[in-house]
Length: 54
Image (cartoon, rainbow, N blue to C red):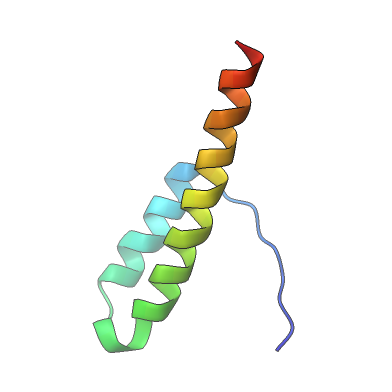
């Protein structure tokens, strides 16, 4: 399957997750987990980068 990269603000991602949360768990849980996993990595990298600048 082809993959694409999208860029969203943290608020926008939370809105997407909120909308997905209103759907049936069975139909969206894998997508929610994938979004959360990628977001955690990016936020951790961002925090580490900011700490190195200080």
